[in-house]
Image 1 (cartoon, rainbow, N blue to C red):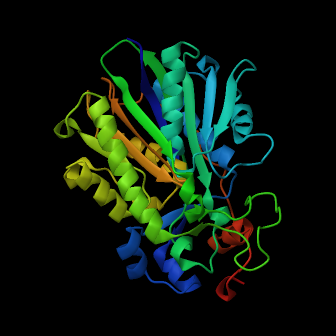
Image 2 (image 1 turned 90 degrees about the horizontal axis):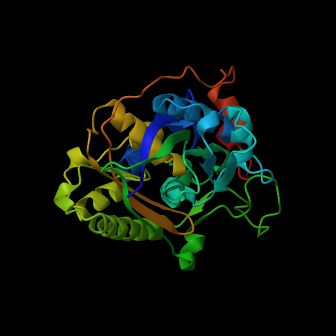
Length: 363
């Protein structure tokens, strides 16, 4: 039986840090308030477009897999913060990587669940024989959608990208199971009222005119249920018991949601990987960035059963179980990095800000 395995992995986090202390000077909040409610201490602010972060992460993933872009025949870019509406961000990534013309590429927007959706799609493409090697890149520039008059959302999000190379294997590892779902009855609980990109008119003339809006209580409740249910279902479908799960890598949205999902899987804290304190919620990028760091820090060993679980706007949700292969070290390394910036944190925030309600402290 042909399965799909992750053979390469890479990440890209922008160098500019927005800490809780910075936010204390900008808006009505505090480090304690943010930490208690989310577990976040700092996040990154990008000075480049999502495609540029995706390309850097992809170069690292390709090097780790020992592959050249010419050996990839499909690129899937998971993102809800596109470079442009037309063309797709995948087209920009395709160009930046120098992919040959036969290589297919498309965007997949499932918000924070985007990486799990994309990984499952990549695996099914490989299992069907339609594609042989797939590059999945998840990239987000959520700082462009922050409304700094809403402290409940402005403190949560950051920018980053992560990527993996997915290839076929005949060995007893790879993607064992995966499920995704949508609950559109609650789509208004987490949204950007306009497109957030092209300046199209908002739905209402009354504030807020744009930026991320969220019903935190409902999102929390539904995330706990969906991530827990799908994770348990995916573990069972993989033919495993909960005691056989070696590591949970959840979407890094909120420590309380992560703790509740781990409890549902009966996992102790040492079997749950988190880095939310360092990056905040980077939407589709959270899981692949966490995967890279979990490998670097020795949380994943050969043959480990790893669960990915995510939840996002739509409301989408997804979970997948993957048995890791023999190799936990990259075959090669890339020197790819973002071009440096000479802009200050405040200049970057002003450049990224695209919605109404700019607070006095930032003017």
